[in-house]
Length: 182
Length: 309
Image (tube, one colour):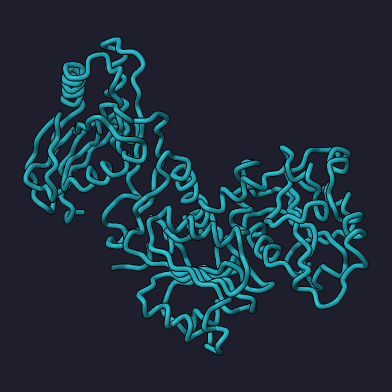
């Protein structure tokens, strides 16, 4: 790929460790906390974080779910391409729990806005936090900010932040690609 | 990215296999939604749907209404009895008047075959066929196939027998189209007077012996005898019909293999199936009703997606 690399595999590993530690600082043994990966790519990220918490920090019984926001998006019927849904797998209630949303890139904030509505179908969380791998600064359409972030980047509108996970591609890497350059 | 190949859901005849796959994939997601503590999504909050029922309905009407409300659409209901239809208004006028109230999608049941196709040519809206006379009932066929897929893993290669009043059944025709499209083998079974001539041309087999049909089948879809559509006697008596074409537990237990029993409702208990069959583990009748909401949500959602802002 000819585009600029923002994070390589090694940097992503360091960030994952740091974010896991930051979560432990705030959530202790996770007995009242649930991790929710946002479909599609946030779920890989959430699984990685959960694995580190379990394997490296011996935190047992972490509730982890996947949330699909397709039916809650505010651009239904406003996009050229149709939206295709992914599965939601939340086998617990979030009533009175601390919820941590996990997503790869925070851009306009609209996905998180949709997720905030969607999660209410599973109860009233005590509080909701947001953890992202990449925060695209100065591009927000809504007053939404991350509580934990891996990296911050300023990119122009023609550019896109692409996060690859080893689970669905061949490598862990974050690229900045130019949408007009093909 | 996938979308339906049709602009309206007039009948299964107009669909391709990919449409059915897309509807089922979408319905899988909606089935998860309707089993949540809060069973509602906001997707269609700026869509208005009119349910026009020119013919009686209980579960289809409720199922559509629930599906629409689960998607957060605004819903208006109309039934022919007590309406201006009785005063001589034409179908096009009735629908155009309703559309003037800024309705985006029309769900219609009508006693006349082809009413939906006619309407689709003359009014500018999305139309979903909730049953037209003895012709098609596409969402019923979709939910039937979806229920078979859920119970048996897939529809392709399965042997399905549709038993009963094939002649007057829109469920039968839509089911035949849907099942054949997905690669199932289909037979119809019933008194010869209730089996349409030349039905073999649709690629289905005909069997008049119920036991033989059930021995062959993986799934039996039991239809009601539609007395309200019969202007002559097609069989000597209900008792004789039940003896020859009714399914009871004794008959099911005597078969070589366990088959799945379906029924689109309303059931005439003791006529086409007995209560012990309807309430047995082999019957998936109530699953069909549950799946009906998910399937209708999927159909409405996918058609609504085509209405661009």
